[in-house]
Image 1: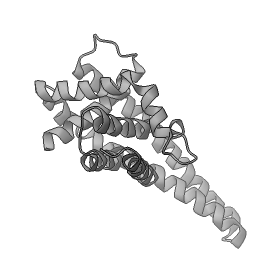
Image 2: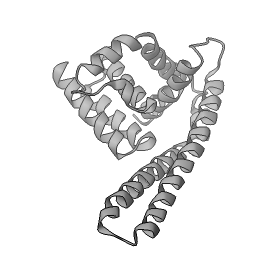
Image 3: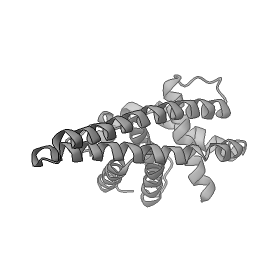
Amino acid sequence: MQNRTIARELALLILGQLQEFGQRGDLSTEQLLAQAMASLNSHLRESLDRSAEELQQAQQSLLDSELSEGELPKVRDHLRQGLERAEQVLNRLSSSLEFPRLLLLADQRELREWALERSKAVAASQPDLDQRIDAVMEGWRLTRLPRIDQDILRLAVVEIDRFSTPSAVACNEAVELAHRYSDEAGRRMINGVLRRYTTAHPA
């Protein structure tokens, strides 16, 4: 079970690279992971910068307002956004520490093939997947979510529909991935969308 959890995470990281590099067949799993690491590091730097900006704006608003009642909602909003971005960065920093283990496990043929099969299944059927997920999003669209959240949902739906993974297992694994790669709002969204999806598409 632990190996499948790791392989699912590997599939998520590979999927991001397959999308970015147009499903090139000449990239090894190790190369895909190395590129995912570079992309993740770049995103982390940008997120940290945005988080620092939000927290600085909150501090400046506090200084400017002298805690006047009318400015407090703006201060709270800046603080909330800054802390949410900081949480997301910490989640992704934590996940990046797992890359050496993932690289080692990528040498295991079964896990590598399992992960590649799922990530390529998502890439090959993405328009249909997106349409089915959009149908249960209740006034929201998949493309409005961060890309990592989109990919977590796509992987879960592929697991359920194509690979006959029990819905409860696929949903739990998706939420675990969201704990590592998303924030609180993303986790809630992913959990809610998958619950509606499995209700609309019972096994």
